[in-house]
Image (cartoon, rainbow over the protein chains, first blue to last red):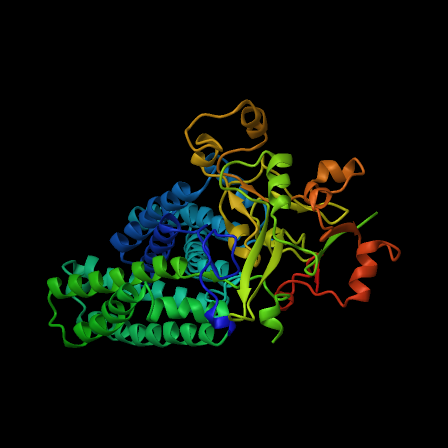
Length: 300
Length: 204
């Protein structure tokens, strides 16, 4: 019998793959709001789009932080996660959230009614943007750092995080800014954002498929995880939602869309649904390799 | 200073799981929590079928990924190599659980401490006194029974094993039995490709 025939063992006292269950829907929700909110802020700041920056900041503060607090076993001790910045991506991420909250809020106040000296204002703006960028990518690093789970243990994971964050940011900027003077008066900006969205969707599709390809040939657990996503019990969600709705349908809709708010809303909805499904399913499909290096089966 | 480690002799293990029971008793483990398990698998087909047993436990890795990813420093390694979790620092984020290649960590959910070993919501006096050592929402794992080790005893699973399939000792002592078994039998570490350098070895 080949190792690939080893069953998924669950909690049984049996040799087999074990699915990770430590990170679930709460964590996926936190990741979702983190990347969508940070992406929205990042894109909006380039256009000085205050509504977008405000919504992005609130998504990170309430959506991401709320998801993490719901996930933690001891939420009141959450501040302790700031203490190991040197080695832990979770620590680095929390530090980035704190810096982003302070610098982002200061920058927004300064944009609305300038009160900071010029140089300080630019510094605060740059710090907010830098912290925002860290939030856009650190979740990918936190996952890829786990050598235990082959599906996650790839350098493409932070890149996927960055692409998804930028894509979410572009689409939410298009939706939130559609009927505002910011985009209504600037047709060139709309075309630029639409082209960027299509490019990011194609890039995202290739990145996700490359991650699956790498995991498929990375280890037996990677093969099992990809099997679950493409042929197993998660395929009915992964293929139509993550691949279909999240990339293919939304890219086609964006390419063919007339410049109407309803279309932008529909494209964003489709893509965000695909992205949320991606976050949940990547957690659900994470599998550990069997600890059976010494088992007779594996000697052959 | 000793560097504690363990050897599993797969030729001797009979899969009785007395180790798991002794561990649960020694550590007053709640319902559904195991620090050690002996896994089984069937190999071959009738009439040449057989069953093998694979004991598993926290490997107290020298380069422990669980310690590296812990955002609070709750996971730490003693000078003798035993990887510990400080329940007063743990926030229950689960980073260590997804970082451990051996799936040897458990987050204590409220129902684990409430439903009791009989699953009827009532705790026995044994559980009432034992469960005080746990905090809901924090992560727990094997500590090689560090209190016993500090008192000069072997871990409970080792002391209980009826076939001496588990051997505990100082990996830095060239004369220790674990060291000799590792050298004589070209012992292997579990999932060596993960580069964690486990302090648990398998011989067969």
